[in-house]
Length: 132
Image 1 (cartoon, rainbow, N blue to C red):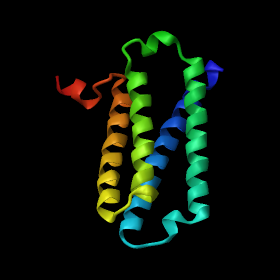
Image 2: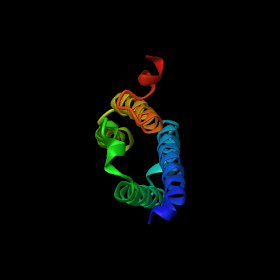
Image 3: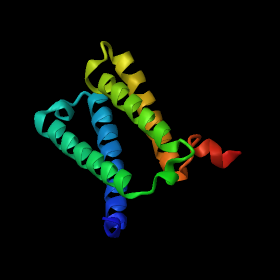
């Protein structure tokens, strides 16, 4: 399966950016008072993208050598993704007030950015690693 690594990696990157972009678009539309972001077709499309993203991630995890993850960047990335998902749910649906949803939306976008930089640098500090 290693021969498909470039295609799987590019699919994973594209799906991650699509997922984050879709989340940002849905959040901004909700705060603008639009109803379509929580409509069933939009949610199902989001679920489909996220499922494909997770599938690509699991494929990469199985074909890459374990030594690549020795410094703990992948564990940090997974923990940040879990936090992003939880906060994102509060931003789009579960937040009790508009203020709570807005704060969760900003935090979720910051978490997504942190995940991105951890993935790009393959270092637990992400962009902070580049500054040091």
